[in-house]
Amino acid sequence: MQLLLVRGPEAEPPATGERMDMDVVLPVGAALAPTAVAIRLALAFVVGACVGVERQWHHKNAGLRTHTLVAIGAAAFTIVSGLGLGPTSSPMLIAAGVVTGIGFIAGGVIMHDGHAVQGLNTAATLWATASLGLAAGGGYYTVTVMVFVMVLLVQFPLQLVERWIDRASRRTNRADPVTSLPPGS
Image: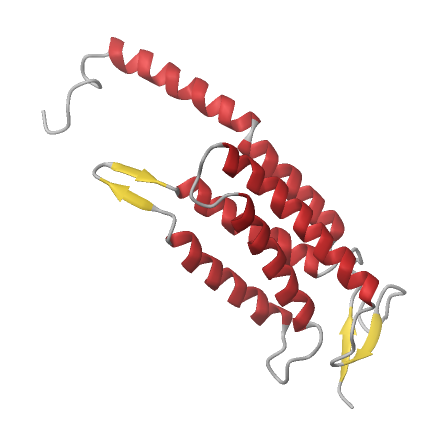
């Protein structure tokens, strides 16, 4: 029987040769309790939906449903990876697959129109939402909440700072004849 060492999400690394109280040795393929699965998926649902509300409010390509599905999907992949999918059931490989897949999806929301590029923030938000799902699915609740709060801080307060900087730079560029010249002049 193959064994898997499962470290508690909040555990500090043990000294050499020492096991920690939060470490549990489970047979590969051991299932999580249904309540643990439900809590992890529910957390992924809530944080994904909350991030998606902001994107939906701003009428972006990827909104409420997309962000919710990304978080739930990433959480599900993380949970399933713990069930032991054979010799390649490493959570790191599952996380790498999620990151690659979300990169493909996020690339689809980036649009180039002349000199303007649209959708970069939405793509980055999808990427961050996938990380929320991975953390929730892995049972890293503190990490999930901390990243979620940071995503909201980026989307709301920093948006105000960004607008202020844009307005200030437009005023400065209008006053400076050198920086306000068209390209190639």
